[in-house]
Structure formats: C-alpha cells, structure tokens
Length: 293
Ligand SMILES: Nc1ncnc2c1ncn2[C@@H]1O[C@H](COP(=O)(O)OP(=O)(O)OP(=O)(O)O)[C@@H](O)[C@H]1O
Ligand SMILES: [Mg+2]
Image (cartoon, rainbow, N blue to C red):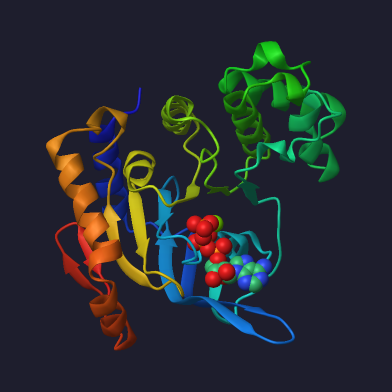
C-alpha cells in the first residue's frame, strides 16, 4: 500500500543528503518551425527531477506539456536551454527514457501481450530471447497480467492495454518513465484504479516518473512534486510538493484547498503572473509552494 508518511521521510532524507538531480531541465525554450510560422511551445522552463520522484507537469491545454516530454525523450531539440540526464546533455532518444502515450493502440495488434512486452528488449538488443521472455513475464506479473501473456491486444480492455504499455516500458528498466496523459482515454473508475495501481507499482519498483496531465486531481494523487505551467507558451508558474496526497485524500479538506489553490495559480492570476514572469528574477520559497516571479 502506498504510504505518504514514509515517503515524506524519504523525501526529507533525500533532500538532506543533497542527492544530485537525475534530470535537469535548464531554461528550456521549445519551438515548432514551419516554412511560414514559428510556434513557441515553452519559454525558459526549468525544473529538476530526483531519483524516484513522481514529477508531474500540470497546465492547460496547449501550454507545452507534451512538447516538454517529447524534448526530454529526445524527439524535440531545444530552441534554447538544455536538458541533462545524469549530467549528460540529452541529444537523442535512448532506452534510458521510455515514453508511455495516451493511445494504447500503440500496441501492435499482431503480437501477443508477451511479444509486445518483449519487443523493445529484443529490438534494442538489451536481452536475448530467453532472458527477454523471463523479464517480460516478471513485469506482466507485476501489473497483474501474467494470465494474459498469450492474449492479443484487441481482446483486452482499455485498462489492461494501459497495463501492458506500462509493463513494456518498465521491462526496459529505464532511468526515467515518461507518461503523457496515460489514463485520459479511460473511464473515471478505471482511471482511478490505474492511478492506484501505478502508485502501488511505484512503491514496489521505485522508478522515476515524469507524468503529464491537465487534471489537478490526478496531479495531486499521482505526483510527489508538481510543476505548474502557464497557458501557451508554457512558463513555470510554481512548483508544489504533493507527496502527502494519494487516493485516500480525495474529498478531504486539505486536498480540496490545495486543488483550489492550484486552480487559482493556473487560471485566475494568468495575466498578472505572465507579466511578472517576464520580469523574471529568482524563485521565492513560500511554504510548500515555490513561486517564480
Ligand atoms: N507538431 C507541431 N507543429 C506545430 N505546432 C505544434 C506541434 N505540436 C504542438 N504544437 C504547438 O505547441 C504548443 C504546445 O503544444 P503541446 O502539445 O505541447 O501542448 P500540451 O500542453 O500537451 O496540450 P494538451 O493538454 O492539449 O495535450 C501548442 O500551441 C501547439 O499548437
Ligand atoms: Mg499534450
């Protein structure tokens, strides 16, 4: 079972020990260029992700969350700024960063569940066939799908396809798991179940997660730290510690207050904050919220 109190201790201990960040995103501006136009997706976004963080990028549609994830994955080069993983500049995709997308139809339908999970291990020559099958079965067991190893994707529910995609990513044992709204296409109950399972899986495996959502509730449940981004082009508005919340906090007074505060930070103060962000200075610490002015 996920244990927020134990995690608070872990986070404090990690901070006290001065662990180096696993991922450093440093004043990252992202652009899309066509023959006729330049679209600015993010403006000088900075954040650090530590080992075993569940770091959430939260912001309104079009603020550049997916672009940030793509850039960390190595698919979208910076217009300016830098991304470092373990101190090394990220220049291209690699097996140390695996992305799980929203569309679970990314599972090739002609491969069984087991073959789907084995595929990246074989394609990247990470493991031979026997070891790959063994590792794939291990992670299928972790996501509760051991019995479905020989099933084909079209026979699975949306939630089960989500689990296969997560097992396939974890089987690569990446340094970071990158998830872009992975549960957005699921119904509300399945989504909640998947959030619960993801937290249980994290408790067991302790992977490092970079998770994109535009749901405040999902951000508070899934994340231990949340980066709030302003509307397009995305800039850092604030960073919030949220390790004290999980699915059992839903509906509680503290949870509601924090959700409302995030909502105000994201939407009500947009004009004032964008103007302030332009005049950029150092971040100011304010309780558990780090504002950028
Ligand atoms: N391939 C592309 N070509 C041109 N512009 C793009 C491309 N992809 C994204 N953009 C633009 O970049 C900005 C950021 O888009 P992005 O998809 O990163 O936002 P998002 O925060 O993930 O939004 P959503 O919550 O709707 O998924 C938007 O203005 C979008 O129109
Ligand atoms: Mg997106």
